[in-house]
Amino acid sequence: MKPKAVLFDLDGTLLDTLGDIAAAADHGLSQVGLPTHDRAVYRRLVGHGIRRLFDQAVPEGTAPEVYQQALSAYLAYYPAHCTVHTAYFPGVREFLSRLQSQGIPMAIISNKTETTANRVITHYFPDISWAFLWGNNGARPLKPALDAGKLACETLGLEPAEIAFVGDGDTDMAFASQMGFVAAGVTWGYRDRDELLAAGADFLVDSFEELAQKL
Image 1 (cartoon, one colour):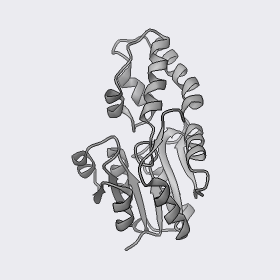
Image 2 (cartoon, rainbow, N blue to C red):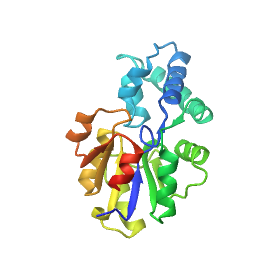
Image 3 (cartoon, helix red, strand yellow):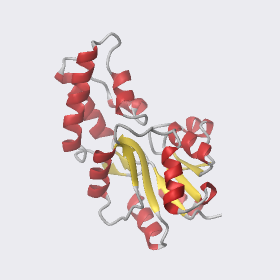
């Protein structure tokens, strides 16, 4: 059955945002004299929200006030620099335009800070209409908590089985699987195939062209 709506993760799914996240995190760490990291390290840390990233990026034993200063420096820097290195994944614009032309509702559910997520999608996808954006506003539970999925069903007036969720992370697949969504894992993001399958992916795709055939 073709889905009646498609939900997306953002980082690592629609856009390669790792360069800007890594640069901003390094900025925050360097502002307080903490060691920075290679991009490959950040690749493993993204996907669970920025506090979880800093929990792992900051050396063990760092004073809480230094941790907070580093995080605050990141939060001040990243929104103003979130479109410097971020790039489209091949075929994403054509895929989203196709869904929009078919009248299929689309929405984004991200663990990214909501204001920054909104800035990013407005910059990179100005012609795409979204049913809603769910991001981290400091109060909402993050994926894989099901709150955003329940909102999606209510907002769209659909049953979970009528909705596909597309993501690159283990949290995405766990979230989609627990909600009863069709869990579509993409392999161009920040987690490997085995992690996606273990987390509950119904199928994996290697390109947006392949995803279009599935959906």
